[in-house]
Image (tube, rainbow, N blue to C red; front, side):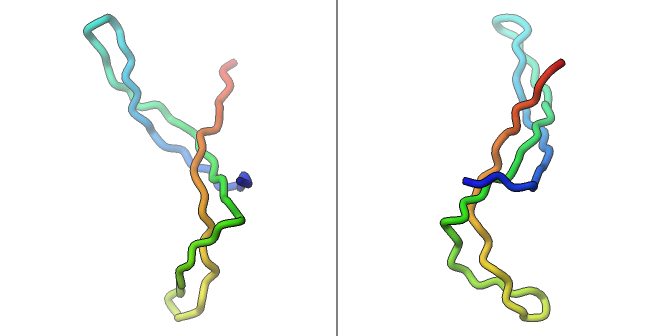
Length: 70
């Protein structure tokens, strides 16, 4: 897998327990990076609005980027 320069932020719900029986849900902002696998390509044919062929998209996955706290 190869890291790319595609980045995105998303908000993920996280449950925070205040006591044994009580928990609250907060949304945490997470930074993710796209990792693609250049060895595997999808066998589909994609065209743009004018009918020109576009390259097949590569497969990959979004991975969380660890954030440092200061």
